[in-house]
Image 1 (spheres, helix red, strand yellow):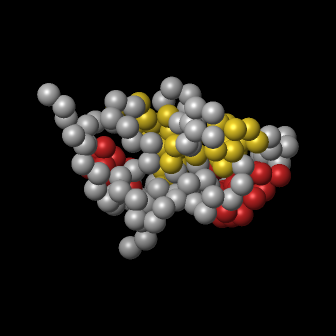
Image 2 (cartoon, helix red, strand yellow):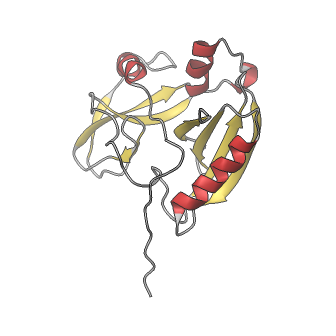
Length: 176
């Protein structure tokens, strides 16, 4: 018996890396290395610029990115030891970002292991949740994010791959 997955619209918008930051990362990443583009022959890399997987033959780059550092700098927050950088895939050239109105959360394949890491307004970890993405990803992630933002101290949630700890996308506290 084959199970089908429905993809409804998420309650919490997933944020890609913003265009200005992408321009900077395509020149030099957050570790100070020059961006090196390559052709992704197989496809499947999780692109943080447009929140989809790469297609075979696309020009991509693997860059070092410090998401919390950049978020904190805009808000005068002080993440201290929680500031970290890690690898992310991006298109080597501007791709226009995510497709508007896409259904479901990006990179929410049933069976994938994910961590929802919560941060306060100072950029410090306030908790997290480990989860295996179920057959119906969107309602489960909506529920996990509702739970995270039920804590008034939570300003930001990062969804990360459990296997490598890589940032997949961020979700900001909803505005009332």
